[in-house]
Structures are given as C-alpha cells and as structure tokens.
Length: 135
Image 1 (cartoon, rainbow, N blue to C red):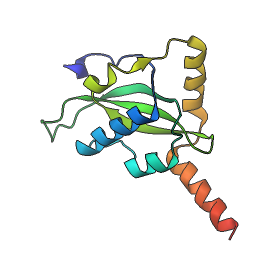
Image 2: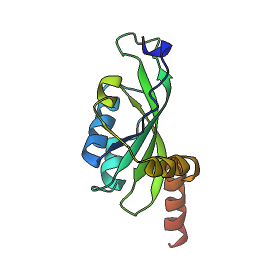
Image 3: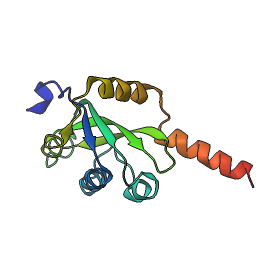
Image 4: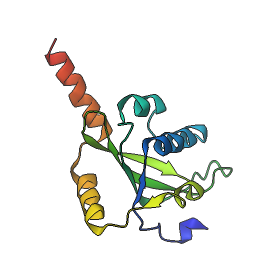
C-alpha cells in the first residue's frame, strides 16, 4: 500500500500535452487538487516544461474506488513567461512513466522556484488587479 511507503523523491518534467492529460485525469476522478483544464489550456505555455514534485500520499477514505495517489507540487511555465506554483493529485500509474529530471542544477532551481514563485491564485489576483487598474 503506497501510504506505508515514502513518496518517491523524484522530480518529474512534463510537456503541456502531458500536463493537460494529467489534469483531465484528475478532473475525471474528481481528485481534490487540480486546475481547471480550460485555465491550463488558456494560460500555460504550449511549449513549456512543467515540473511535478511529490509532497505526500493522499487517500480518499470516503471513495475506496479511487486508489491512493500523490499530491504533487506543480511548477508551471505560462504563456507570459511567468512561472507559478500549484498542486496536482497524480496516480502512481500516471506518475511513474514521466521523465525524470536528472540534472541536479535543474532540480535545485525548480526547488527554489517551488518555494518562491506566486501560486496560481495569487498570479490570477495580480493579473485581475492589473486589468482593473488600467481601466
């Protein structure tokens, strides 16, 4: 059972197509942490590299049909060039085949960004404030 095991300490990198698929899976399964797919398609850079870092195992005890899954920190590259943080619940069967980040420099940089960049919510709020200030 995954909850009895530590989460993998492996940083994964995905392209936008894979990210959209992971978000669609989370939506289909009604997992707790996910972004609206329409938001991802509208805001995420089509050619972007995005990163998943497992934080902890998550279980939906009220839904035994859903397997244990990882709650991952997510770093997104946006069309604007900004990077933002979010969370995404990912099944192990979907996480395992993703490409590993093998560069320690890249891993350190992503770790720093996961601790310093704005969350999606804060980025959206700043963008909305900027739009209302220009009106």
